[in-house]
Image (tube, rainbow, N blue to C red; front, side, top):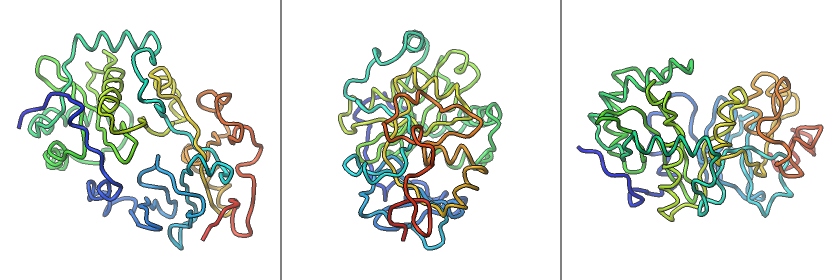
Length: 324
């Protein structure tokens, strides 16, 4: 199969049920995926969060997803902001309809324009190319970032056909002289597009291809007219350079009202043991790091402006909302 030209017509918006069906291998290895209250949740050893993590649950419907979970987190709609006990950070393009080169800083605009002349972008549907040329990029990318390989070479090649041929996943690939040098996995659920996993060769890294891929993927979804916002992931406080890059790309940290629940003693241990994960759920930065991004841009009820993680306490936990 040949690669397709990159076109807004390739965008397909899926449901949360389809998202879970799309990655069956992750339902049976690693964190469990459970359905509760009409929504899908990732249950990571008792810490539960939404699979579609940029989606919201009305405050009146928030419940403890499983009887044995020791913490859960979900965003709330804007109209339920008064019921929030935390403000959770995401990298977002909120006004996607008006996102363009003017949204980037001058350096990133230069990178985008230079890469536009040097690379060809395609919708990566050639399973053979992804299997053969994608594996060296995938493995080298993991080594460079110090991350474990989720898939070995045999498993990666076996999955390549499914990834490339599944139209629910839109992979933006970059070619140089006909060879794959980097790619960005994206998907759209409801009114949100996610820019998920980017993997780059050394050549692509030196050429700042990341800026080009992020920008053009966001433009693809803008032009489709099918989604209202783009989520470029959750902030990584341990990697401030990535946070700064996304800010310069017009994908800054945006704080959304959320509900977080955990018994108070466990919440304190959670904050100490997994500060980066705790930050992504609550907006409260690790103790030894300054707040990522610009705390002055956070809503007035952001945890940055509160001396405590939450504003209320029930008998069973730190959140003031319903917990069961």
